[in-house]
Length: 79
Image (cartoon, rainbow, N blue to C red; front, side):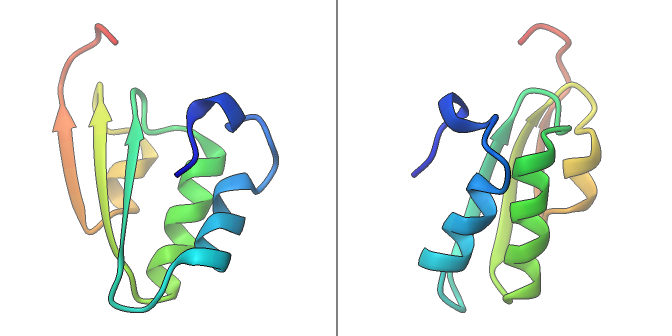
């Protein structure tokens, strides 16, 4: 797994999906805002590869809410 400690690296999560994910697998993404470019890019790739995508997202879900198969939104502004 990768964490927010490396979120600043370009394409870091997408490379993980490319290298590890297998068809019929799942990707679970966590974000307080749903706006992390790196995380969202990985979700797009995961869906292209046929993986189930699940997002645990704060606030209004941001862009991530539309990029996952199952958005679990916690509508709180306190993160």
